[in-house]
Length: 253
Image 1 (cartoon, helix red, strand yellow):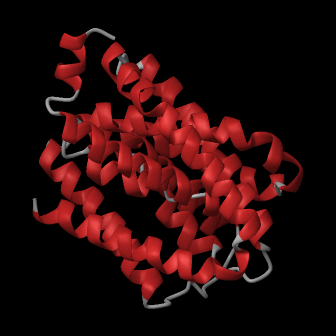
Image 2 (cartoon, rainbow, N blue to C red):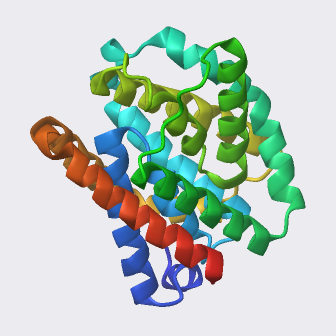
Image 3 (cartoon, helix red, strand yellow):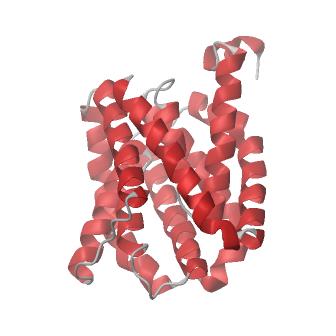
């Protein structure tokens, strides 16, 4: 990567430092919980990148982490659960791509902020979904998640609100589900972006710049998952407060 290209991607060194810190936090949260990486990255990256660039960078980073954690989660994955929302998510992907091409970038960025801050606020007050569960609900959640993944890189909120309240799912199985679902939908979304010619060299270089930090954060998150389960609630609440702040700032900027 030449010096000129580096300055084009990161106009100032402090921009790279702050974004790297966001990547470190995002990867740690995602590796610990199975979700949340895009929720941290999308609002912050949207301040410096066009929506399509932001989505591709978020997808590439998260997919790399999904591959890294695949051996740990393969044998604890509930595949029936994964496919129940993955198929409808594929239907949602082209909807999200259409929206990212149609919506104004500022509107997209503020929409991301609303989604992130809204999810954090809902989870902090302790609201849980206690409604019906079945094929219709799975389709709604999956389709919405697929559309949000392609549009903004934040496909987690529908799944989090729907599955976290299901007390029959253990934390290990839930984490594995999130990892496998997002690996599948991220790969599918990147294939759709490639077909639409929405992936370029700049996005790949952005991702490559942050990849070492993201891999380090994945190791840290996996360590915390193994060693800090007794403090999971504290880590979860701190993560949610961080998401609430980031989402709120993105709305008003």
